[in-house]
Length: 252
Image (cartoon, rainbow, N blue to C red; front, top):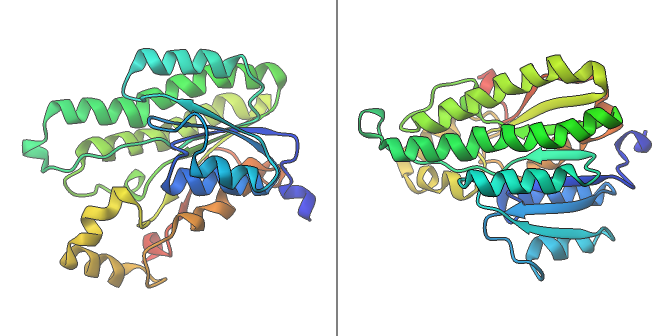
């Protein structure tokens, strides 16, 4: 059975790899045998914590720095990665802005949609072409519970993550028959920078924890197993799904 989850000899691109969920995903893929190309807006060229974690598993690490709100920079990154042999693409980079919808600045909306949806399509389009030419590849998006629900005070984020769920299905419809699996993971309430405002609000934090059957905030490492599964041969007949990793939240 272990061979089903073996990624030895494969190369994985993980965006947003510097910290949080992206860090955990990159490290898990390296532990399973993949070499990692990590991309983040502020990722150090050498000496980063994620580089140390990946190389500790005996895998190579390449750092790329890209601002995902800068479309020209994303286009350049897409062209560079399209020229590489990328076996696994993990679209995890993202941002969030919180304000009631009636007062939500359009600049915030534009930036969140650009980072969380448009840049991910551009990158997947370019890398996906190369995967289709080879007849093999795995694409994994980071969706959200708000791909299923509406959320509060995050209209841009909810729209983008709902779009990611739809894009996952659309690409799977086109690409699965050509050897490229496209899926998404929907993290639950994970203790990262994106949820700090919720965790710092005693009332919101308490109401969230009361609804999670697992009884705790998720850890970034809780995403490791799902990531390796969707990147590995074990998921060759899985495509077009958004897999919740949420401690039971959606089943409540």
